[in-house]
Image (cartoon, rainbow, N blue to C red):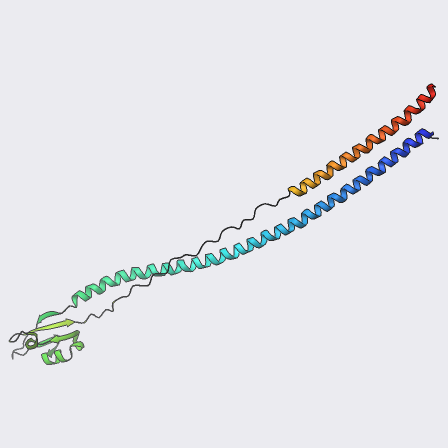
Length: 230
């Protein structure tokens, strides 16, 4: 059977244990609340990051599509310029060969001037009246050309080539490349501080209660010894 001092010691111990359990439960509730707040704010932060990344990816996709279109346009322009440079040289050569010139035509045995094409002899009048039918822009007879008494004519061959047109250069690509969003880092310092404070408070209060328990037990043990000495 427990003596009165022993009973009181057990009572103090039970009360101290009950206080510690209460403090531990209170601490767990605090940590749960801190964790809940952390998870909510981190979820909000993550959602914001996801939205920014989605916007960036859409902008990047649109930029790449525009640049690809520009690259195709530029490639087609360069190909067209290469063809133009080649064709313009041929055209200019043909144009030079198609300049107005003096041509001395032959005469037949009767002294008539003629022009021969495809094995067929064409008279001067037919040639001057229908010059385009025979590959000339125009043909001016000897009398009109100032070569009276000769078989010389002024003729301008037709340039059968169409003058090539240079392709239009595409406008300079000025689309700005999208920049990565400024996401930053999630600031968890406030939650760490709250958790640290809760842990410190729990340790301090447990320490205080243990100290109070030891002090109460010591006082209960000292008093009976003093009475016995009397």
